[in-house]
Image 1: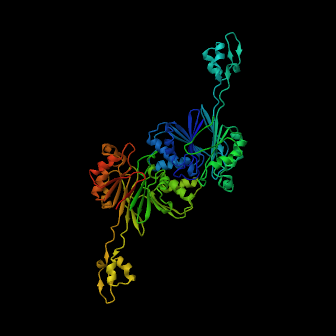
Image 2: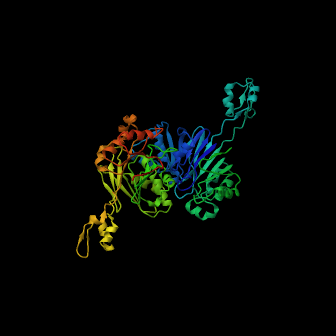
Image 3: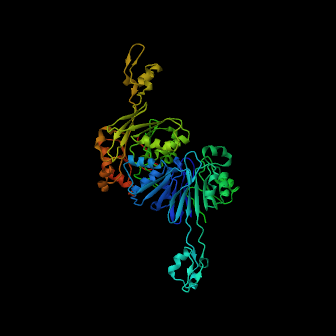
Length: 302
Length: 302
């Protein structure tokens, strides 16, 4: 599991900081999460292949999280994309994009599907062979969702020395990896646990931005491998956080601690701060494994 | 008169090229023409003061000419702009911007006025003390206008030695600069031409992008100081120009020659070309005074 941060600063794109967008690679699939202005250029700069993007998740309809979407969709058309594209985001995203395509008389040359969200409860929004994606309801000024992307459990690992010892036919390997016991020609049953080892534990990633401190999400994100939680403010500006629907670094760390996640990644820093290092320090007092998102940074989780 | 080119490449923003946007400074006023994705960052990079922008002109509703507009408008709000902003562009621009502001529940904190265009004939769309702005109907795949920005003629220049020789009271200077004759105390009339010299000839700028070769504009842009004319293609790709509503460098030069402009600036280059130098060469064979727009370049006209 690998996270490429394209942009992780709040509010407005500047010369050296980009608004929110990130690419999660999980189980060889790429997922684009949020798409602030300039995302298409950051995708190029970070050498992410446009054709590998099939699903885009938009957390909410503040400009710093989606103003780059219509441009990316248009560029895909100019580049003669043929593969389908799925956009998951709040109700309204379809009207916003299609209105602009209508006026430009530039409909996409590829199938474009919108999956509009309006539920206030977690929903399963994608379920394929490799991953599942659920919404995480967030607490912001407007309707907003985070996204919980989980790798599906892999097959059990075949202990090749053991299966060969029992002279088991290759045709049964697939079933054994799925957890079946083996039955030998003489009727002896070899229990699965003697032939296989546990698979790598599936990895999971929770993206939570923008949101005020919201312990309601704890059960849902319990034990995830990676949690990206916004920290727009430091505790010294806590009085700004709740009213604007944002969190402090300390609050993000409390969520990470209480959900027993493996690693916390902070981001969505207010541009009022000259340095982002104090965010790590503040969160580190509450939760040990903290990483700071930054534009262009690649974060590994295992 | 000074042109700052923020972006001048066709189609889609890339790592090192920006879509169309430029700032014309004329008579101490700044005008933003077109606003492709990333324009707000290019404005910062080129140190253009946001607060000095009062009028934005959008040529047409293809994404590479306006996808950066809503972001710029939102950023002005975040920066607590108070001054009014006027957006002049094709019918539809208001709905596109306001729909996005509605979903983000982020109305502007400053007065935002839309002046929607739909005429197929030239229109006077701005007329203040310093300049006039007219639309230039263009020939493109969708409704498109160029813009003709003209400085108003300045006051006549007072020949200070002459007025002092006749001992004319300072109170009359203003009238003399406006062209009035002076009447001395003894009734003698001193004709204005003895007291003043012609003012600097007013400068003018025509922006014509995107458009196929369109000699209909010649009368309107006759003798302008600066003509920015798109040249998406070189003559070798002329077969692509007309069907897509674009021009070649040679066609742009023919317009410059036939309109007797002072200087031609080329831009809106297709990203298929590795170098833009052949555009200058091709146009130069038809019209001598050619400059190449390029991102971040400042072009002076006098």
